[in-house]
Length: 131
Image (cartoon, rainbow, N blue to C red; front, side, top):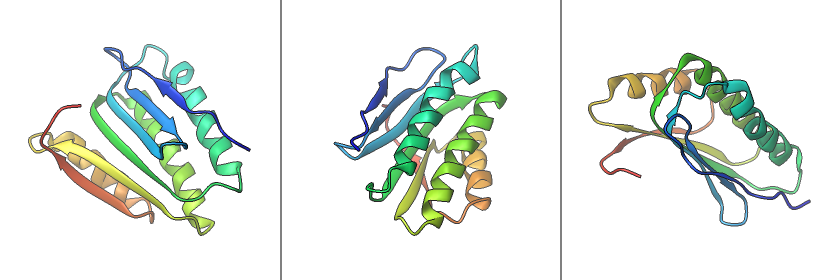
C-alpha cells in the first residue's frame, strides 16, 4: 500500500502539516488553536493510523514545532504521540523531535512532559530560526 501524503498549509490558528512518506518528512509546525480541534485533527489521526497499520512502512521521525497550542490541541498531540509510541513498541525505529525557542519555557515544559510519558527516542531541540 502506498499512502498519499497529507499536506496542509499553516493558517493563523492551525499548524502546517506535512506527512509525506515519499520524502520521509513528517512535521507539524506553527500554532494550533483551531476553532474545532476534532475536525482539524481527525484527518491527521486517520493518516497516522493508516501509516502505522501499513506493515510495509519502515521507521519514522516526527518533528513537532509549535509556537503555541491550546488545551484541546494538546489532547490530539498526545494521541499522535501515542500512535508513534505504539508503532515503536512493535520494534519499528521511531523518533520524536520537539522544537522550541530558547525563551519559550511553556513549550519546553510541554515537550518535557510528553517526553516523560513515552519510551520513544525523544529529542528536545532549541530553535534558533523561524519556519
